[in-house]
Length: 152
Image (cartoon, rainbow, N blue to C red; front, side):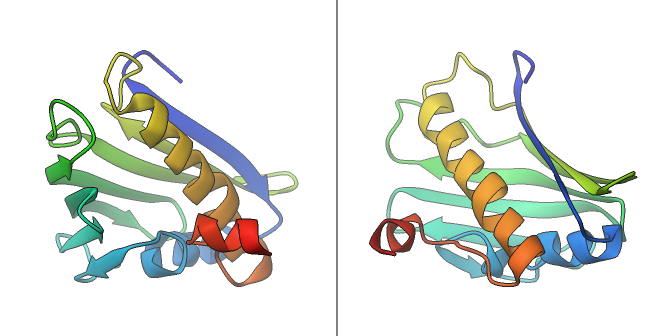
């Protein structure tokens, strides 16, 4: 993690193509209501979770088996003083073949440690990336609803 971004990385025993397909299947690993295509370059999709979080992401890079990048064109968080903290940030997924599989490196550029949402947003990203997305890649089903994790 740098001062102005959050990075989460892990390695899975899957091909870069399988990892890329899982990343672009956003509805399978991120909770909430997602509208719009999540796998088309230049497309925009909106994520909404109750009245707590809404953001619109534009897909700015889509390189099969290598990289996915989103630009947050509009963001709203109802639990911080500046509800637009995510607006203008970028979210990247770098997919790299390594000796024992594929490394996934998620970075939310602009999610800075000094921002009010950093603690709760970074905690949520850790769950969605390191648990839900990783599960989708390794086991098939993602785990987009943390409350279901506690019940099982």
